Every structure is written in C-alpha cells, then in structure tokens.
Amino acid sequence: MSTAWLHRTGCLTIGSVSCATSIASGAFGSHGLTSLGDSEKKAWASANKYQFLHSLALISLPTLLPKAHTPAFIVTSRLFIFGTILFSGSIYSKVLMMKTTLEPNGGTDEEKDSRTAFARQVGKGAPIGGVALIGGWLAMALLRRRGR
Image (cartoon, rainbow, N blue to C red):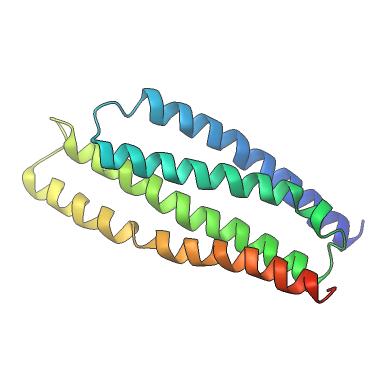
C-alpha cells in the first residue's frame, strides 16, 4: 500500500465524513437551535457552509492534484482539514456554549458568566482556521502552478 494511496483515500474518507456531519449539523442548526438569536444562527450557518464547501474541496483534491505524495497535495489537504476543524469547530462550540448559557436552568449567574467568557476564548480559533483555509487554497494554486 503506497503513501499516495493513503493520502488520496484519507482525503476521500475525511471529506465524506465531514460532508455527512455538515449535513447533520445543518439540520441541527435549523431545527435544534431555535432559541438562539439571529447572530448565533448566522454564525452556525457560516460554519456549516464553510465545513461543507471545504469538505467537497477535500474530496476533489485527488482529482485536482493527482500526485498525492507531492508537497502541494499534502500541504493543501492538511490546511483544509485543520482549517475546517478550527474554523467550523470553534464556531459550533461557541454557539453551543452560548445556547447552554441562555437556557433557564443553565446554572448560576457565575457559571453562566464563566461559560460566556470561555465561549469567547473558543471563538478565537475561527480566525486561525480561516487563515489555514486561505492558506490551503493558496498552497494549491501556487504549488500546482509550479508543477509540484
């Protein structure tokens, strides 16, 4: 079993699972987060959209960069995977923490304040993930152009 085969198969597997979880989280956002405000719903929808789009990009990567052992393929796939986890994951986590804070039986005021502060810290992963996603696209474009 070659390393290139593992890279291609990994992209297809991780991308497919991520697409499936994106669809599930989209349904949860539409039906399970009705008590949230518009800004939280928009944040969830944004995270969901970026997860789905980059999952599709990851699935298509073996076709766009057929040499799976090249730096272009490895760098691009890793940036897409880690960027999606950081970007979408931090937003999902932040919204879910805010949801538990808003619930009537969500704990004491001190516990709610602590969760809100923690949710803000978790949300700081989104810009780092966004930079990784941008880096993935740039790596694919630049390294593909060089023929690597």
